[in-house]
Image (tube, rainbow, N blue to C red; front, top):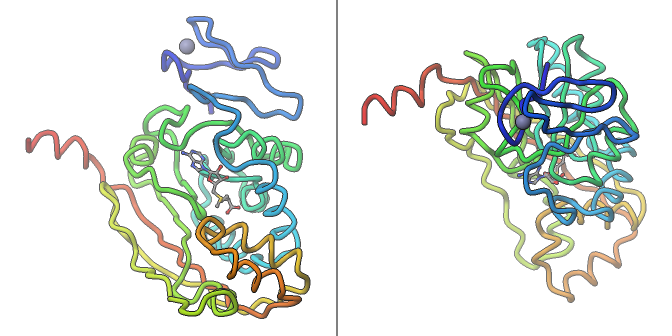
Length: 273
Ligand SMILES: C[S@@+](CC[C@H](N)C(=O)[O-])C[C@H]1O[C@@H](n2cnc3c(N)ncnc32)[C@H](O)[C@@H]1O
Ligand SMILES: [Zn+2]
């Protein structure tokens, strides 16, 4: 698949190690093989080095392997020719998805640190720094999009997906990390895992993966906590409780939603107006 130029929207072609369009906008491949196709790129955007490193430690120990397995089996059945893993982070899931299918797999994230890590670890998928709200891809060029623990860009996903294309999202199920929350907060609450209503998409299915994990050292507990949104809104007192934990047994509970693109949805709404 050729990318689309982020500046003028013409086709980018790979010449040696540079993507170039007919208007001579050019984007060099980095040594590790990724390309920066983000308009208005800022080095500080997306997850930083510390966040990427701690998520890597945690994921590579296999605590979330049950989710990766379910995603692999779903994607294998779909067998897409082109799959985008949007907000792919350091490519831990992306790499496993690529190993399961023959089609091409592209990982996009706006964090340079995450994409650098992914492109070093996985030479089979293609990686680019890009915002998922402004993908460097032509309309109707993608069969399947995966979106794991990240914000949704429904309108952009609708644009790039082919007719009847599939979007698979992963978000926390109601029991996700409940025992971790119990250990830290006085009044832990369950997540609301009602599927999001996405404009331009039909929800085909919601399925869950639920299992118990044993996190066997304080470093991994800390790494897990840093992967969650709670890391930004926890008091010093509650953080002290977290730091005192030596091991942790907790449920992980993932909500997987499979959506299908509604054909002509945006066109129709414009016609009605
Ligand atoms: C919680 S992490 C999940 C990463 C990966 N999917 C995983 O589960 O390991 C969220 C990711 O979204 C990325 N991100 C946030 N906003 C983004 C955007 N607008 N475009 C691309 N990536 C974005 C962050 O840089 C980060 O890597
Ligand atoms: Zn251009």
